[in-house]
Image (cartoon, rainbow, N blue to C red; front, side, top):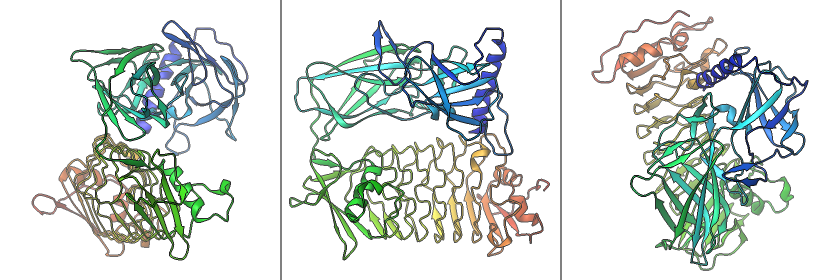
Length: 589
């Protein structure tokens, strides 16, 4: 991400340098002014534009626009600031302990946009957009914010009286989310894949009727064809709308484009379905059921539960009873047997469907031994980040029937599953996954991973992926394609893998910038016993000549040479097609 971020910041710096003759106020503290229009707060419609103001508590990210890396930390310094008041011009309070940002400045709202990536999930708000991306560029701390996206207004109505919208999923011929940069006209230019769609999460559901209801999404400016919108109701009914052949929707920066859609009916699902809440809500609900002796406000996903040993999902149970979980129209109940450690999640509905957001679903259930997805419907699953994070005693996971084709992130999905003995991920479809950071971090006892089914063309980050996989001996990543991954996003990729004997890669296992990753598999202070291949000793990469040549410039060379006074550990390369030995020229230490 460093290279994408720096290029965008340097472009902004050039813009500022060109405009330095303009007169800017020069306050001694940060002031944010909404120049063109709207943020996430209340608005007043004026023609096809919206007027808005800051809310007290709105957060921005401020950084210097010169793109200088500081102290080998691999990032540009930035600071979070919070709006101190409500209005179109407000001062911002510093949230960081130190402030080392120098002019010229660049700032983003919402604050997470400094990473140059639009989220693929937006939140429904009844009276307008929940938040609208904005950016400011200035030689002083007087920041003039302008929207960098346009608004798409989707108007839905129906003659039916029982439809509540749970979510809208949008797809088009151009990306609606993912990476972006901002041009001279403050327009966000999407850089992702056309498959990068957008979901509007309506939480508990939005009722529809004969009068149209507006749903707002922020999208990058541009002309969109082949636009499809899939509406999912709270009871599982769906309907998909598509533009007529040849129709183009034009989105302009800081403007509203309305897409009027009249719903004549919705598809009645073949199956009666109950829905689980989001992963975080599910996690907290189960911990509260298991530990009724603790104050409810103490429960969070990071609370370590040591009572739940097994979770059984039981759909189709007409006698389902217990404590309600979530807000599904067909209720879902949880009941816990403290004598056996079994948590039963049941519903009278024939089918039980996960939320698309399963982030943190089982996080810090430290005693949990096994999980099965066999009785769960998972179509539309998009977020599996931290799903099993810190499940310290988890030994096995049954992914039978899981549908992962729409999953966007596996960030820390299995991290700190210290007792996980094996993983069958052959059924995983990862075509749309963008984040595999710390995926197997501290999976300490796994000996073999076969990831041949993984497709990684869209993945942009693989830092810490096999970090502290201390027992891993055999690894097959021959399907990995790193065309979207810069070298900087492979840091600590194989750090502390002393048992590793064999790694199989394909020809596309080379980062897109061909740069070596910092601490890719070791650093100068790593002890011999923790270095890759030290238990054998030796490690073999079955690969291609081009990949072997790239690996030879990473600090894999330190493993082979025994850099920093350590004993050398031999590294071998074999051709994946012929089995012949490959010869490389190692970079200097």
